[in-house]
Amino acid sequence: MGSNHARVIAESGVADLALIIDSDPSRGRSLAEKYGCTYAADIEAARLCDAAVIATPTRMHAEHAHGLLEAGLPLLVEKPLAPTIEASRSIVRDSASRVVPLMCGFVERFNPAVTTVMAMLEERPVHIVALRHSPTTPRTTLSVVFDLLIHDIDLTLSYTNAHQTPRVASSLTRAGTEVTEVADCVLDFHGALVATLSSSRASQRKVRTQMIETPAALYEVDLLRQDVTVYQHRTHTLTEGPAPAYRAETVVDIPFVRHGGEPLLLQLRHFADLIDGRVDAACERDSILPAHEVAALVEDGAT
Image 1 (tube, rainbow, N blue to C red):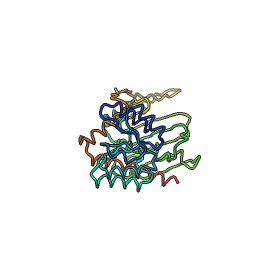
Image 2: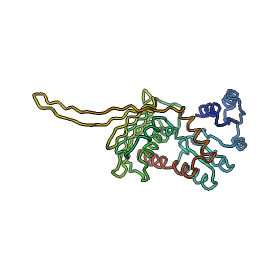
Image 3: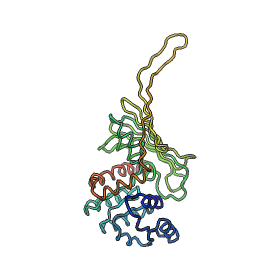
């Protein structure tokens, strides 16, 4: 993700990529040379910048975030914010006490398919089903709950504008190694909504789909293809005779999805607006922890 962020910043036109910090000199220097910026091995070098993106391994997020918040740097921290909920809360508290903008890398919030559905939803969803499956990622040391599932938890909370913590109705994990690679959960929002979320890093293909059902419509979302299909059931009849048949009439709509750029670029523009005060820093900060809190509940219920 660090190299992806470097590319997007360098090509964005909304920020200058001044510095790349990496503990691996050959990798860091190569990337810095590619994008025409400075390389450093020490995180302290970032104090000379106006803002920073933290895309280090999750176990290092808290140390780096606290150090740069102390220096007054607005931060975009890749998700999850930290490996434990306590450490995540600590980063958010530090940001608030220092009045320094903080953003978490929930990049799916900027997926054009998601923003299209958010604009179309007129009723609170009653049922959400999400699949987020990927092939094996050998390098990861992070549970699939905080790596993949947390995205769909975050989007579920956004779709519902939920302020209550859901009950984790059930959860299942299968650990092929010491790191959890498969996690399914059912979130019960106190009878108002049920969300069935599935994540896997043990699949044979990459899948990113959601079905969002309201009383009046079903929204089918493909986050990879960035498209949306809307279904609305109109009528149904049962014909009499020797071979009774059920016939249903459903209206299918494929709305236009406006593609304003890749989600990582749209996220960077939002970060720039946050730094410049065009986005409410308190609201942005408050939006970070809810998905982490639910992910922690799922993780606890699955172990």
